[in-house]
Amino acid sequence: MTQLVLCKEQETTVVTGTNPHALTGLSANYSYDFYVRAICGVGDSSAWAGPYSFVTPCNTAAITYTQDFTTWPMQCWDLNWW
Image 1: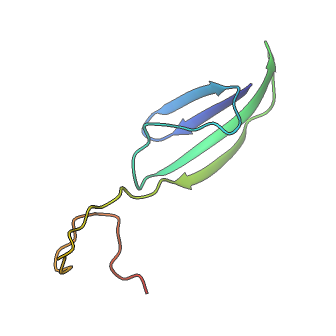
Image 2 (image 1 turned 90 degrees about the vertical axis):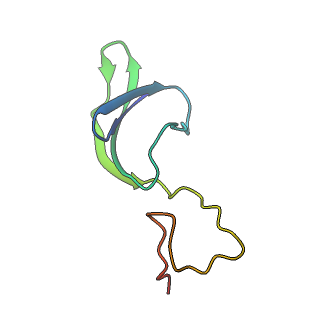
């Protein structure tokens, strides 16, 4: 088993036996820190490893074919890509 602690405004603890483990309900374009440890049995856990960090991707945007890019509907998309 593996225990994962995900830090945002509040800590979320997940205990899982799957590897990899997919997390759901995360906010788009947000930076998360997490810690992980192995649970070998009752009272037998490894030391915490971390913090590790990742950023979730932006939401998708449905842009019309006639978009003239004078306004931009998405907060985390960058028009200066070059």
